[in-house]
Length: 412
Image (cartoon, rainbow, N blue to C red; front, side):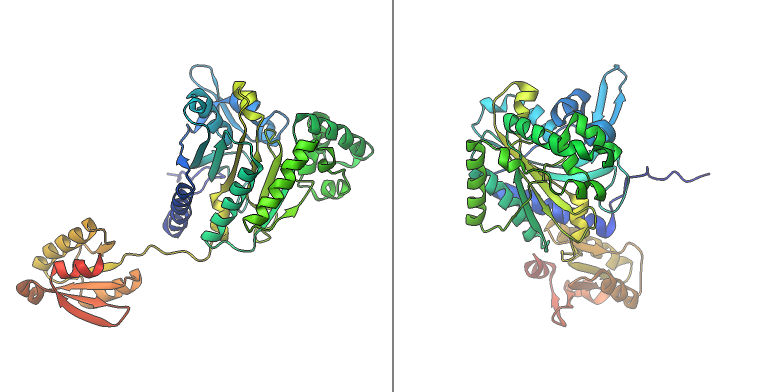
């Protein structure tokens, strides 16, 4: 019988990979909670119209990468390719805007895009994301950007660079679109086929092309910053001022537009040179128009997302989450006591390993060494008779004869 394998573009998370995954996501949840963010969990699939209207037709995500199917009710359903549109849908549908002035959410979950699988890019991938709805201040922009950078620093991701830009509002982008089209017109025949289509449907997407020839051809493209109005320019300058106040260095890049249409105003990415072509670790920006598009509400918003798998590729220094203690027992009676000791320690919150089949003491010590535990508890006939067990401390090369309660006092 032929073995059924996982679908191309998906990966199992187990062993050391699961330890990395938990380290990142658990630290993210604690970190965001400290900043006043609450968890939100949205369905893994939504109506297709949500992403077409929210992300924008003409984007690669909508045109090429979405997993879309008809369900048994003949409805067009899409596995979520990103988190923001779904959070906004939940915010509008549940009228959260009527319950609080500013809403702060974080999410952790799977996203789906039909892309060519490669290092750091899978068809099912995991994201952590943050969304703030109800605040338009550039100080918020700077605070969220600084928070995202400091989160990566907290989990010891290094050699990162923050890149920022502003893509302005609808009128500014319309002016810039005209300028960009004038620049692109004489280059049209040299552009890749995708960019020829982008030029007609959504010319700003040309600046987001990853093809080296297109990147070179558009190197001298006009800057969108020159098309910003007075208020948008002020917002951008305030953002830069507060990034400095928050102690975060940045580089400006007028080509940075991000790959989703809902962005307006501030956009940013945190990048690294350690991932090759897939250099973006985290990205986001302001999307003040999205709530108008999806629910006819003039509510400002800002957010970002990061790929967990990409962070995992950069993570070298992290706790291994090994068992703290190993219970070694010799003899049938000792097995019963050993199981009770292991159970009591686990209930008390001590991560404990124990064997279910009999081993020699030499084999027990070999297993304890392999597990990398700090302590081993030795249980044999003499220990049971005395109601005291031997606690070996591998860190200090000491051992003690203690009751179970005394052991718990030391380990808990």
